[in-house]
Amino acid sequence: MVAINIDYGACQGCGTCESLCPDVFKLEGEKAIVLKSEGSDSCNLEEVVNSCPTGAITVEGLEIVVKEKKPF
Ligand code: SF4
Image (cartoon, rainbow, N blue to C red; front, side, top):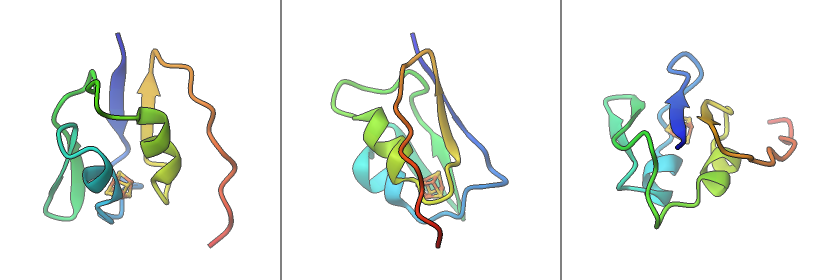
């Protein structure tokens, strides 16, 4: 069982998470929300976590290798 969380203070509304996993993430205004906190079979959560430019997405209960971010 996993639980996906978004740090709304860090989210910049870029839409990357929604474009990678539209069944799990959705942009509402300028922030992303989680539609399915347990994720889905078609969603690679590790890829999403590492693709978020601000590191706003965290996933509890899943071993994820967080790649080092390049400075902007
Ligand atoms: S990828 Fe990160 S910054 Fe972009 S909308 Fe999703 S949570 Fe927000």
